[in-house]
Length: 275
Ligand code: C5P
Image (cartoon, rainbow, N blue to C red):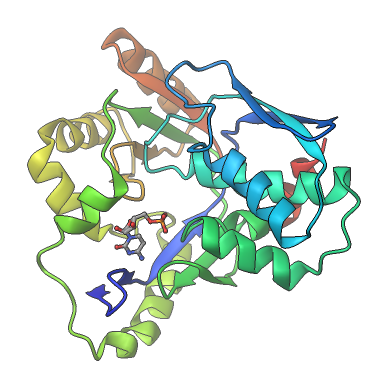
């Protein structure tokens, strides 16, 4: 990663969709954009990324219809899992359909980029390489893992803070690292989801609980454990269902939110966006 002139960090990352998901119900309203959410920690005003997505789409297509967006939140909030970003991407697709908009896919991608660096990925799903500020996504050969355990320590790490903590940045001429990223991407097929996360060291230094959770996951039999995105959620990759379920009950007894999940490939992801 290196810091760019626009203040963002140029990054090389691997994205993966998993089965853990929120549920959104989108219905027509005359003119207002209304958000409701069953999790009181989620703001339902204009600061909600789903609200921003609806407003941006409406402006871009110069129309005035409204929508109610009900969010059933299951993805930990501000957990480094892209929960808000995935909501925003899906709102763009759902409202295109509800409002019967004649907007081309590249224009939807453009709006997604404006909403957040990782929003375009959630239009695609599966295993993907993210470059630029994370908004440029390329499909990779799919990784398949069936026994993941996602654990959230119960505190949030603001994304901008995590980036600000990155002291050991790659030099500016780093586009040369792309081939290495591709080798790393190939590597994750051989040792799935064992890729390292540059955020981990700096974020764990400030939040030791993250390293502790990783150690516990490995102690409970995870083949690999890592932090997701800018934290603070961690995941463990297990070989057997029994081990991931046992780890889940241990994490639950210790008071942590945890969820058994599996990777979800592009085809399945795109099919389940509208169910
Ligand atoms: O693009 P998004 O709104 O998700 O980014 C949130 C914040 O994370 C940005 O304001 C920026 O501080 C930081 N960021 C960054 N480099 C990136 C992506 C995000 O510095 N590639």
